[in-house]
Image (spheres, rainbow, N blue to C red):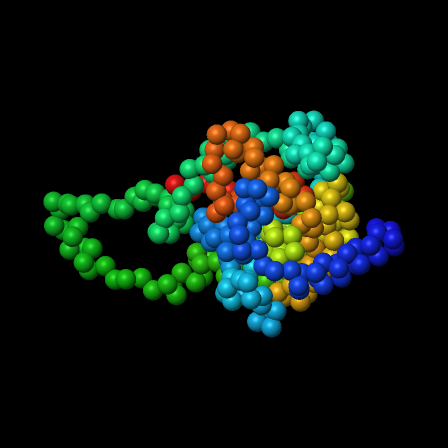
Length: 336
């Protein structure tokens, strides 16, 4: 990023923060007309997201940083430890072979969001249309049926055998100590020493850390992702805090390795989180409303009625274009 661009961003941030303080909070819904949200609609959409995707939770953050237009216990949304297995550059070759949809804004080719085509887009839209809120928990649990073969009682007509069994003494396990029937150390057990001996493998496309051969645990980058309400732009804003394979915070340049090249250093920058006070990467919301308006219009054209409580599902779907390798949950795989 050039010094001029950095200076422009600093000036713009100062301007937005100043104007935000004197701008009245949006109270009238403009969801259909402009693709924006009121704080009440943001809470409504967040309630549905946390209800259907329970990896997301409401957070209160630092009480001294609470904003008055949101409930104290619903200041922002958060999902933790989201895996990121590969770097964005590994998708370059794949993206060249993909057919992409462009969501153009104001007929300006330079201002277009490119959304990769997926095979389940139609299924996503169908589930989104039928999405309903119920009063019962919808946590999906997976049960595994295991057929355990229990020994069946056997009967014998030989009374002598029964008497012999009754007379048998219960063996003492100490008697087997010298017969090597009890192993002092199970080789299948993870050794504490071995678990600490980790080896890191890295390439230009992926970076994962695996421990010794006995530790079959894949270690990868993870992210804490939060969504705040931006009063100035009247849309959600996404924040990213990353960890490397050893749970150490990622440096800004490392975070940009997981950002689409079309958006890194352009729509993604570093700033202090409004509710936590520590540095996060964030996706700039200046185009969020325009993109959401296009998606809402597309739903209407397809004969589907857009719902404001489903806003964050559509929102997170297009945000995945910016962070395509961070596998956060915005799916609709549940019973409706």
